[in-house]
Length: 135
Image (cartoon, rainbow, N blue to C red; front, side, top):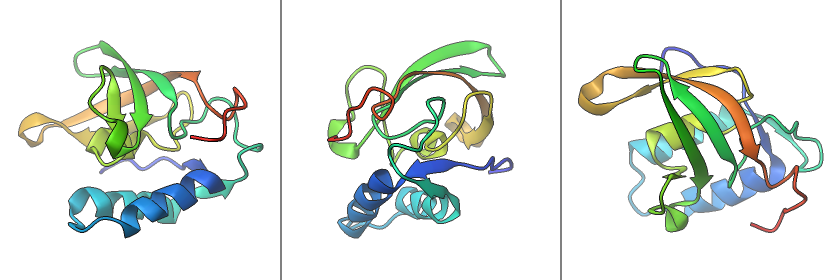
């Protein structure tokens, strides 16, 4: 990825994602990309994460800059993916969204290898801000 903005994740998300990576039998490129993101993240307590940061199970509003198309996505664990607007943390865009703050942009590989640029416009729901730490 050509742009790698600084990211923030919670200690609880880090522990859960490390367990997820440990459980991966097929440690492919998606798991390797997630491991790279986790290694560079600033880790904070769940009560210290700013409300405008994407955490696990956050619902976000973002725009693909090339097409101007808006997306409403929820960042989920692989077992919860498949629902409308749910994006697995192991999908390239899911991994790229983790820890972003409102206003930051990310580049991620789209179909046919064309790089797409997403801008995070809003975090519509964040479990930590809502006091929901269990999932």
